[in-house]
Amino acid sequence: GLIETELEIEPVIADVEELNQKAFAGELEVTKLSYHALGHLLNKYALLDAGSALGNNCGPLLISKRHLEKSDVAEARIAIPGKYTTANFLLSLAFPSAKHKVEMLFSDIEDAVLNESVDAGLIIHENRFTYQSKGLRKIMDLGEYWESTTGLPIPLGGIAIRKDLPRDVQVEFNRILRESVLFARANPEATTHYIKKYAQEMDETVMHSHINLYVNDFTVSLGETGETAVKELFSMAQEKGITPTYTENFLIN
Image (cartoon, rainbow, N blue to C red; front, top):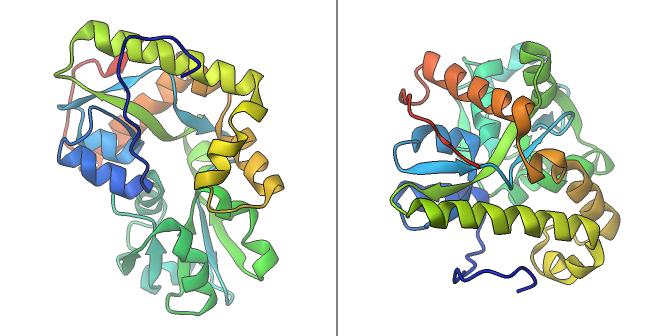
């Protein structure tokens, strides 16, 4: 690799909900996790200070093909990108009565809304840049909902490391992760080939919009604001009984 370390790293490429499920099984020593999933796993995993996706105006969108009012959401069949995604957590906050949820791969949701096998879809990642061109409409921006409720950036996903690993390994992984993010931001062309290989939306403009939105200063380090936002999400989830209550420190920096 381009960042020096004595750690041996074997990449595992998978959809976010698949990674969430692998973490519940304890299969991965280090993994990207939805913050919602991490809220259930704070007994097994700690959060690395580097590598998170937080931001403003970058949350999940609830979309539909035909016109749906917010009052229609409770009875609507909604495609979600996974039970443990932060998107589904935000949907539960905004629409606690929405119960008709259909789990599917995030990249299949737009088509499910288009062919009306569901009434609405909860879209994440690059789909937020493509849905309008397909004639779909926004019911609600759940990131905006979070920001107006809390005044904080929305924590979507982070990089978690198993608590049973030695502390020096946890700290070293956080270091190389931060250096990797800094390198990739300074040398975007160095990562383009790798990203294209796994990107769902191959259009380069969409790809770069996606990266610019989700890879930001919070990805280098949560900082005080980012840490406050993450704590707010965890405490809200615990208060509402969505996740178990954990009190120990969760951050490796």
